[in-house]
Length: 453
Image 1 (cartoon, rainbow, N blue to C red):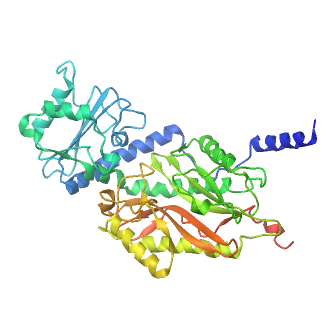
Image 2: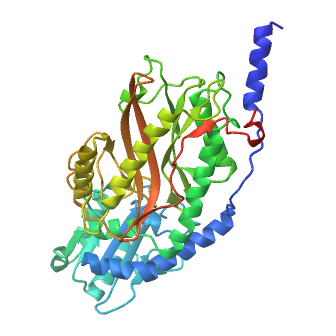
Image 3: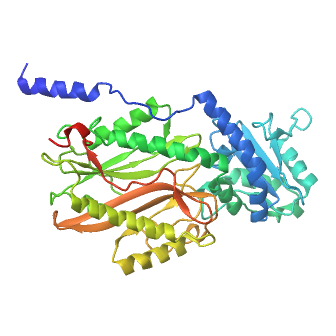
């Protein structure tokens, strides 16, 4: 066999061979996960939903979906063993005047989980829509919220057929009561309970552990491994751990080479696959889904050159600018302040401190790009009408996503410090779910027994 072909074959075999990775964090079995999801759902309906309905001024919420054409909200009400609506699933949630709890009914052939009790007997009333109308009229709500929204796709789930049919069946004196449930839907999706938050740090820690393994010598062989190899390693690792990914991971490179234009790349353009080399700065964008909650994280790693045993100081200094920008942004999180207001105040402080960069942070939770206040967009550093005008509420979660642009004289060009970390806002302060990256990860990691060599 030709020597070069032999070496190539060996490298491919090494890249494809299974590697031993310690699992530091306990991950529940599918059955255990289902029990937790259902327990959380019952708790949310019982303790969270009544106050959200009062806040939105809506006493009846109707959610209607057909199988495999689901309203994004209905998925958050389905039990763990349901992967989709069945036939046509109708959920009716009613909060009577003065009541501290909600009534949760399923206008369906069966109960929907433990909370939504069956309220339709097809043998008695064959017309499902007529039965829904009967239930509405019996309760005589002041406002009937349905999921239609111009600002949030998450809250715009009722389709035209369902809307038209509902309006056709409703008595004329009830049609004027139908309103957008946008703020109720957003509040339901964005607000986290104490039980969920007790676990969210664990979920973020799992994600961070996977990121660290992927951006290490366990996976990367400089001169051989490509960014695409690392991306697919992440996908396989997530599956091995019986987790889900909500978007395909991305790994890209910034380097001193003048031909590398990564710091100028428009985010609408995917970075091309490249072989990872010593001196490269690697950037990962990564998210997992576990227990119906999502992470969204971006971190940085540096591939040490021969003779280096640590990340160069000039890169460490640049990284600190990214951390400073995070501090500026989170210091502007104030209850009641809109996403647009937070962005404006942050950019004022950036200008005062001479920091170049962009803010594009977003809510995080049951969706990776969740509903709530939009705080800038990568392609718009001005106001975002609609979603940017939504206020900040307590007990909500955010991906603190941004970049700081720092000129490196050692590279004679700009370096973009791209960071993203999950964080919780309790109404007073922002707390990172599992801390935040404060140092660039070196590849390979320092070995204590080799430090003095």
